[in-house]
Image (tube, rainbow, N blue to C red):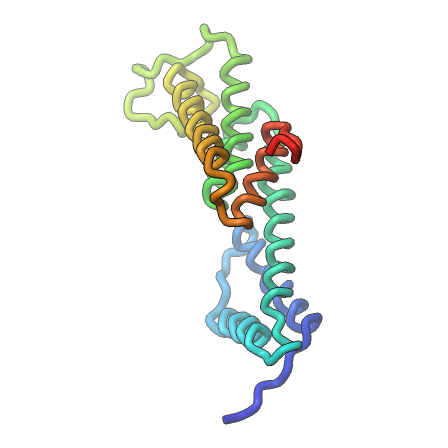
Length: 200
């Protein structure tokens, strides 16, 4: 059996950041190529080796914390900032909603649905499209085309309501949640509902 080369945290993290950068371009559609099998195996091997080195060189928690920080920043800067700063373009909002669902960001999903509801409420109902004239067209594609109807209003309302009810169900079981889940829920409640730490 051969001895593995020890990888220090800075060296391994720098290599991972290159992989993360490539992953971002793939997720954002900027890159047409996926990871090659060689790149994937090198990343996997680097991470595996860094997480299985003998203490104090076992960097599993450090890598987890760094990657988690990167991922949260990516969600905040890519998904949430675009949702918070955009108005009225339902095509973009629907794309952000899809992205929020892919990344399982309940914050992003709630904010997108809120913006779509707001767009419905600001529009004069006489400008709503009759759904009968849109036979065979899905509600989501109607919203994407800036065509609002009673059906699209109900779709947005029901999706938004379901997310809020899910959040309230979590709150009722707050004491029994795992600490990490409780922490994430606490952050969402503070941000979305304007709760203070004392309220929770």
